[in-house]
Length: 122
Image (cartoon, rainbow, N blue to C red):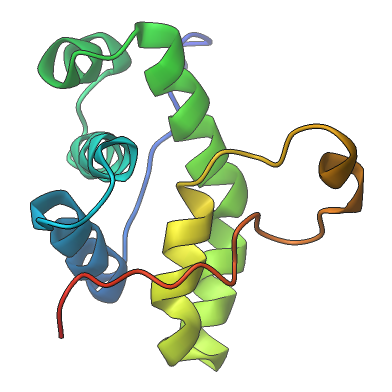
């Protein structure tokens, strides 16, 4: 039977997983991106939100929020990967960034921070 409280499943392509692993292990990557990459990887492995929260030290609601944000952006990430593979790194970085706050929020279109360039190695 379907569980109404089950967290949405995350499926990652090989390039998405590889980029998230690089973010997770990056030495010059902001900590919030490391945490978010880690929680998306754990979610893709089938871990529940409570376990991910315990592993990462984040609040369960924070894990829930970022899982939902990733799921909401998944089709856009897949589209970028298929049509503009070189833009995938920036798109993943944008998907893990906070949404713009204040007046900029109303102007945001697409993935927030899509122009963000991350240096996570070759």
